[in-house]
Amino acid sequence: MGDETVRALDGVTTTIAAGEFVAVTGPSGSGKSTLANIIGGLDVPDSGTVRVGDVTLARARDRDLSAYRNRTVGFVFQSFNLQPTATALENVMMPLTLARVPRRRRRERAAACLAAVGLADRSRHRPTQLSGGQRQRVAIARALATEPRILIADEPTGNLDSERGREILDLLRRLNADGVTLIVITHEAQVAAAAERVLRIVDGRLSEVAA
Image 1 (cartoon, rainbow, N blue to C red):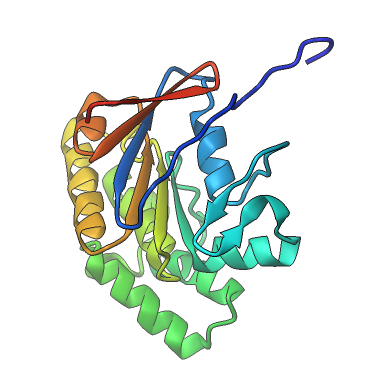
Image 2: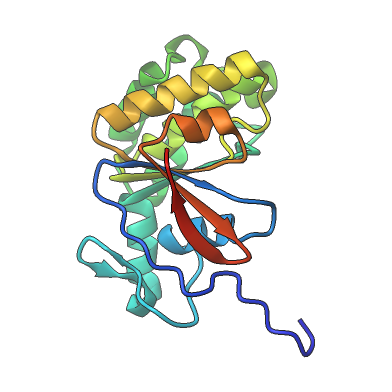
């Protein structure tokens, strides 16, 4: 920023075990989303090492990063990021299309994911025909379509009322209980309290607090 250097993440060191539920908290602009984007392979750090399983992200080629994003990690965004003209089923099929999964298998897998989040009867509805909580469930189903080992959710309850937020939190906990590593970026105390560990970031520096 002009003559000023801003360290979005400053000397961050942490380990997240397979199957953990970790919440990342901190004020706006503290580096939470940057950390999530680096773990998810969307951003590359200027220095340091990021290792997920056998993959070293900082040294991975673009092709390998694309494969990692499509197969290993799933993203859930606060704003849902659904295609407005597509049905719920078509939205969930999109990452499978990118992965070149055969069409019949895409439909079967997408339908199973919608059923898993309780939306089997809404598969032909478009986002404008769904409530906020239902749209977030579609977004979660889409994230699960490629059977990722890691699910990164950035403020997944931020646009929802308290009841819908609790429903989404319960769903995320069930997914974690089934073995999905869950990393949730959140401002909400209720969401952080549900995690096994809480990582707090302030001015790019990370500390661990009691869950």
